[in-house]
Length: 391
Image 1: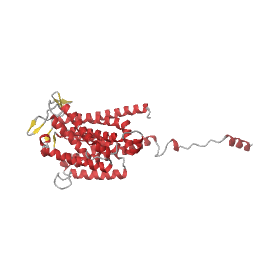
Image 2: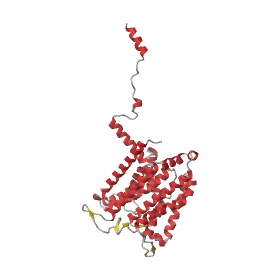
Image 3: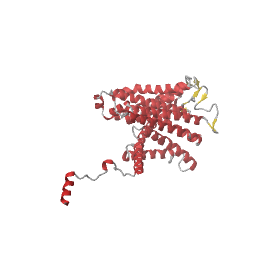
Image 4: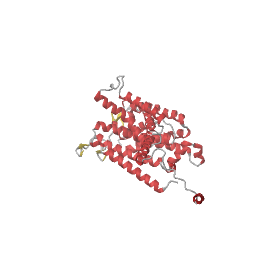
């Protein structure tokens, strides 16, 4: 059993860390313009989804390529529930947006629940191939359910609002410390709240009893079953939980773009999320967030810098554009991490922190109490013999 005092300290430290992260992010809109903020919003949305996938793949040990499918469900469910009843052939239910958002997340979780019997019985490559089929099914549905999805042309997304105040829109206009708070500034704070809540919830799961059970199921299903852990229940629950995180990421992504199209939610998106989890370190919540920021922000930052400096080709020209360069960088990172640091950014940060602590304490690697040699004490009989010999 864990020490209650240590557990309490860990929870307090985690809460302080999340609060510090939230406060640091809250200051960003006062220094960056909207074009940079939208990159951060998309990165935070991806981080929420990556947290769910790292729990599924890293903690529970279940390979899934269906993350794009569940993200699409969250995005389109919100767009449909909150959309106006009639919009040029695309229907909507006109629900209050603050109700549509959690219901969209729940619908994504229910979709994961529908697939969970398959997830509970398969593992490894077999589960990965089975989940891959969901992406193709999703693409077919998104293109053909035109009244709901808008087909290949997509559909618009209603801004999140509360009592007429648009939380992700421009109305009403107002300033904070002389900085106009438009749609992107407001969406930034919505994304911060979503990310902090997701991280707090994920830490509670992975570092509590459910996380220990999932780790046992991942490492040895036979031993977990012998200990009374319902293996299939936990495997199915991990898939449902991951789907809910994906749904939340889908809602945030839809709000960030303001428009959803089927092409965005394809196989490449699922692969990108796996890369996020791998770069960050499988099973690491903080690592998943870092990996999400790298994978999401890098091509967007490169594209923004390239357009201003002219060092990369324009998109679609066939040359080395920002997307191509980012893909090459991701490939090199994945290979390097697999070979040099399988623990990803999480393990690298732990090693760096340990090295800094050793340098501050003046110790070398391997130094410690166990390596400190003390001169052996002389037994009393030897002292007596030595005394008699001198006389």
